[in-house]
Length: 415
Ligand SMILES: *Cc1c(COP(=O)(O)O)cnc(C)c1O
Image 1 (cartoon, rainbow, N blue to C red):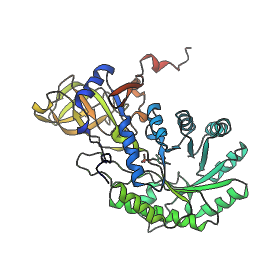
Image 2 (image 1 turned 45 degrees about the vertical axis):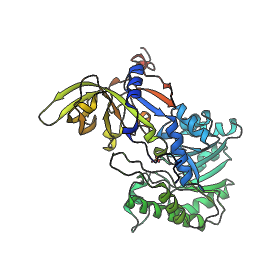
Image 3 (image 1 turned 90 degrees about the horizontal axis):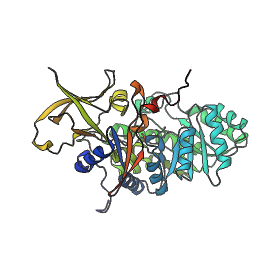
Image 4 (image 1 turned 180 degrees about the horizontal axis):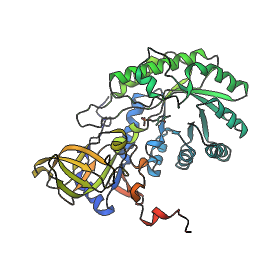
């Protein structure tokens, strides 16, 4: 690292409170804010550590058009999980697109195969995770390059995370890959790569050890195939510190561990981070509606909930919460449970957080909301989805409009 490198992580405390308050004033809340400058810094940090590897952005972490364009401009490839993602990645200007077909619906395959014919110079690879997807592609006349998604978690003696991280739903069982590879080649397809992704993520030493095992197994598999591959992709899952006292991931260490574990390869080693590219580039702004003292805690009711940011309700995920009140420093710390407006017990964004005594009308910022935030927003409880604002330097522009109440019934057929 040199002093010119971007900081490894942007903490919630580093966002300019006055600027965020102004955005909340101008656009209303709940509001996602995504800083394209920070997205570029994250890509630069990844490229610095993984200098020899091919990097794809797993677009499902954030598919807002502006964000996709920023990442496409940096030259990263796109890793897509659906026809919709492939369409959006192509429209945003990605030239190389990997479509990883997880139990692909017929309509998805139709769409992706037709795009591969229709878009000139599109560098598309379809990654199959089951033998019968091969037949489905054959039926559609696909004759482009293929990769195989491997489920590396097999047998005893392997780290629990590797086994549980890749549920049987994902990928072809490790031991069956050589047979499928022969089948792919026998049917005249161009087999260009192997792929694996463990969903669990790399945060600490145990995770890094599990990652090493995964990569080492994949390296062996690639060497055992008597066929030359272009790439071996070992997935995403690079962790970000959600808690203020957590250290950032040491990317250089992860990169050298990845290289070392893969061993000698004729193929390019690839990674496909999603979260790492966008998580700390985004915050969610929300306004306090009610402050209710209870015997256990102060319940702070806000206008964002599990339909705005699902991760706390779905994964028990921790997201830092900060008061943007101009006089926050003068207020006494209060243990606050920040809850949304949805009729579900799980609709809590943070429990017993020491916040400067919240007041109605305060704007709160929720950190690390750039990844899997807006993407997982829903209309449950007939809540319109929030707006998204994109920052670039001192500029800001609306990237996604706020849904309205009439949008909620837009697709209904009047009887
Ligand atoms: C979701 C996903 C990723 C990205 O995971 P992150 O944890 O966001 O880095 C990479 N590859 C595949 C196949 C995925 O499904």
